[in-house]
Image 1 (cartoon, rainbow, N blue to C red):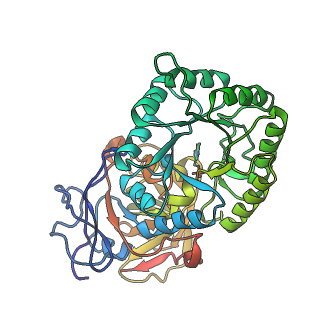
Image 2 (tube, rainbow, N blue to C red):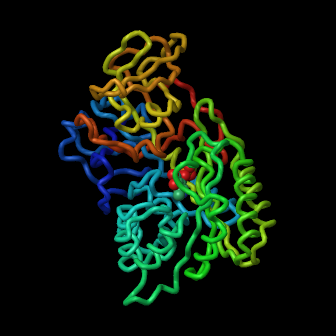
Image 3 (tube, rainbow, N blue to C red):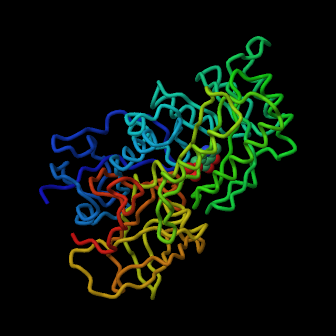
Length: 449
Ligand SMILES: Cc1ncc(COP(=O)(O)O)c(C=O)c1O
């Protein structure tokens, strides 16, 4: 290796929401690399030498320097490819759901790839995106908002698009966006329907969404207050079949027919899947085709717009995390990231992620299933897996855990003092992909240095 990997600031945990300005540069060799070396890199257990000229191709380059803290590997090319895929193939507008990964450098990659609209769910996300991407259009798609947040979003940040699922929320939006007692005339209001999450791995059916009997009066009232009226829904995250959208679109159709209102926007939400072990979905084109067909049959005008709000599908492939094994107890590996770090879903909903042992010598041991313990003192900091790795994994080994760009890096906390991690741009492909040429079988679970 011609030098040490470029290393930049450790992220604050949770995301610090500060625009991070100038830490990104395209090197002559085409590699994304850092301009900053973290002052306290020694404390992070990372390389202590100045930035080298090496191309960081992937986890093996980083493991050579034996980092003590987890390292997040960032793949801008993967996010760019996903964004372009949606831009080219989704038959409407794609909003990025910021909650899935709010890191500013990712937001810039998506913006540069043509994503102009952002689904934000809190004032913190409104401020973050407005500061990072001043030209972006923000859509406040949380159906239950604080009046103060609505007012600041509308008056200070120019947000015009809001979702709602009750008459109370509609009233709140109308009041908070009024100026000197005069109601706003430029609101885009999207009524969220409750739809089934039965085809999805993560339900979003319990908390939000108007019930069928509430929809007619709500659409009617929202129509009076809106410049543009929309209907939105969320089929749940990681929807494993396009049928989820076909069924939800049937609810949209019923609602429009019953309320007999003019609808300007149909927003099919997020839920588009990524590829994880044991959860390999059909091609995304199949989802788009089903949505397009259902949209075309809706009783709406020719000028009505179709929107979607992908989170996971745009960023899951963007990041993986390199962790170190600190202890082995039978088939349990104690690693330095966990439930309070990037592995929330692995711990709390038993999600499995692709893993690869990163070691100097290839392992000839037979693969076996391991569970992971994270670094905190908490029993809950346990990821059942099983994660399949060569049977001779031991303390001191490094493991790359893939597909953590969505709801992984975004969920980090500083609990027990284990929060900050280093982040490095790498060039290699994600451990699995749904996009184009990279939609190949998952990588091998052994990587040599
Ligand atoms: C309103 C809304 N839109 C979009 C998303 C993104 O969903 P996904 O990551 O499944 O695409 C979410 C996720 O919770 C959401 O609540």
